[in-house]
Length: 229
Ligand code: APR
Image (cartoon, rainbow, N blue to C red; front, side):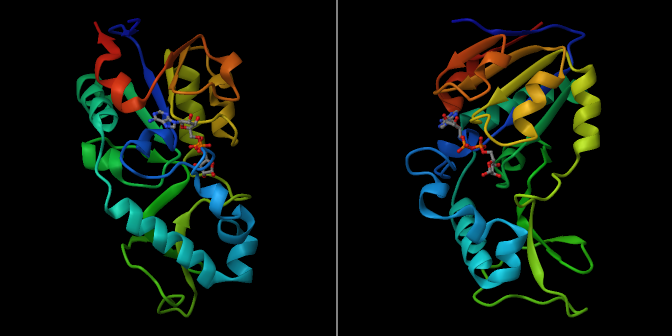
């Protein structure tokens, strides 16, 4: 099988999407049984949804907290954590996922779409660890409503300045388990001079931007995919 060769002076940028956690039992968004088959984005994952029905939004994220809390990292998460231990600061992991499976496996990702197990007051804006399931909308001591610490459609993802800086200097770019539909992540591959690779069972929308693709599941391919010199 072809491998992704990582040379001593390579700087590696890894972007993961929902497919990374699929084998851990967390549904993706756009696959057959994906979340957006059963929920309408505009009803549960946008600032308008929050203004219109904050309890429905908390019902959605409480359900996602319950599912994610029962999940375990899969061999794909563990393979990326091992690669991070080998490469140290030469590896940058950016995830679109809001679960904490990368962390549980030992990685330290940038969560560009926020974190499921954090909430924040919409007034104070400070995120805090929160695993609660809410049957009524929580409020901060300041009186503000507490919202999920998630980047909703129409909001600016987190850490973009750092992402763009690293895209400019990385020499290997690997996207794993993401359909290439949602911006700005879908454009990252076009914003780097690196050797670019895609890992997943289906062709992403931005397939043409990748130099090489590895067809298959993250948990099955990643443990033997990297050849670190
Ligand atoms: N291993 C690797 N990839 C997989 C696996 C697997 N076991 N199973 C499914 N996939 C792939 C699918 O082929 C698909 O390309 O994962 C991808 C999942 O695509 P989406 O459901 O669109 O998820 P993602 O690309 O992460 O969505 C991006 O959209 O709704 C927003 O904020 C949400 O972060 C999310 C963003």
